[in-house]
Image (cartoon, rainbow, N blue to C red; front, side, top):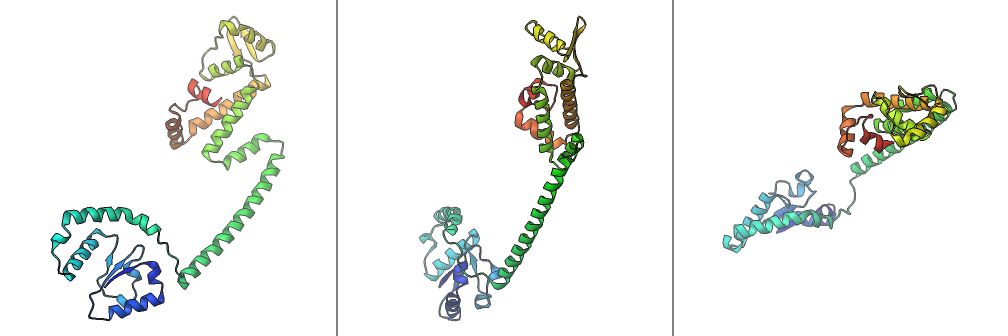
Length: 278
């Protein structure tokens, strides 16, 4: 008698009684085979002590072959080892797919059910607490954003942001500040970051003169410089300095992840970074 024991079989009282009857019949050779996820720990007294095999264990399948050959008085040539090993390997490879076609549909043990029920109740209570905390924080954030000190509000928001969120917020701030300025002023800001003099191209001279007339740049025979007294330029300078400080202090893991993803250095004063983000 070969008993193929699945979870569904094991949770059927009728099947277990039938199994017990076979086990106590000394006239029959009895080989129970456990089908995953059934394990030795789940065996009941009805077959306790029987030499049980596991369907997903190569060594147990070898023992099964030997038992069958012995019970039927067959020689090993009926199932030669090389061919057997090939078939066994193919079967073990297919076993996970086969098991998915036999899902457990039996009853859940009372203890297991009560544990799951308790966990569900705890999760529901925890979720309700989180939702309440979320509502409270949203109200708090709304009150903060109504304050006049926008810098203090931004600092509070950043304090509770992830590194990625903080980086994205800072780059968006810079992008917005640069969008308010002419291209020649943005170029001047780029060279200011590099601590290099801005030398406009011949075609840009008219734009530089216009920016000078509008108070954004100070252009003279000595060179072209930013007018940091201008509100728009000052906002861009402040935003760039904050981003620069963030990059300087950013965790090594963040820098490595950025450089791996974009194949470029996380350096604000280099063209690849500038073009990608602004």
